[in-house]
Length: 363
Image 1 (spheres, rainbow, N blue to C red):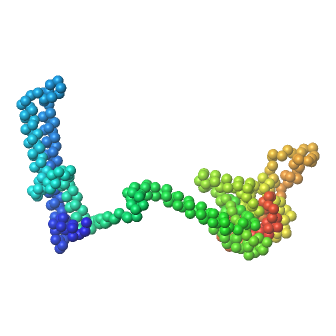
Image 2: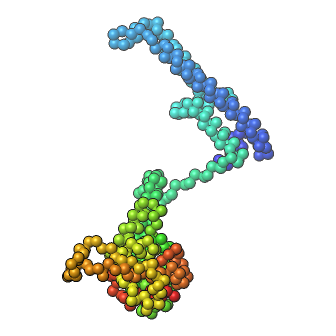
Image 3: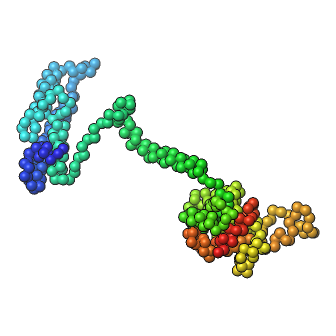
């Protein structure tokens, strides 16, 4: 409804002030409500009268047998019908509202519809709300044999499902494209524990390729494990940790102190007693990283060494990691952690590259 139509509905001119519009609306609102309430009261009274007159004398078949009651009921019914018809055709201004006698709308429904239009016109003129123009139905969907209303309902209820499906498809496409275009790393390192490395991998990779000629394409992965994170996330990281040690081709691990102690005692890292000095690491400064392997599964030989048994030398403490907490290379790349220990994985097949990487971290 535009303002011109709204002024016509309220019966005000173009120069009417907000005060004039409010007064006119109040008058019409009161008039229509009074008339609607009057018609409702009349309808309720007629219904009650009809119920009260329903107690009549009947025969065995249930038919009315008293002629006087039958005549009285017929007369009252005819009068009530005439009264109702007359009431339905009169509006609050005394005009005839029965424009379509055969239509389904009653006088009350017509008055309520007119009152709704009056309220809508008032809101438009006062600027309280602006009804958007009804969108014209499209021509494409009917041509395709698709019901437009059903299509809109489907999109309304399943829009989030469709969005998730589209994002899933896009993710799969990018993953496949990444796998096709991705160069397989010739050296892999992993960060374990409370070490923030996600935003540093690209810069660290560029620095490694520039500083270590024998490493052409380094790869970085890891598992950020903080005991304060939620149970599901912690479980997922622990599972990833198992994969990194069990199935991934990791050459060097960079761990926080807690996880270094845990895995060093399990014998998962190489002994660096002889390697550390030639890498430039100060063995004395790394004495707190010297640990003994705790392997209780193998039998201990108490009488003397024998094939297939563990000797006392297997329990002697050794250096399995080098402290790189103050590594300038890692800090410049953006790796964030309180403490970091670099260790060569026992299963690496690239000893030379692993040592070169540790030497690079010590700069």
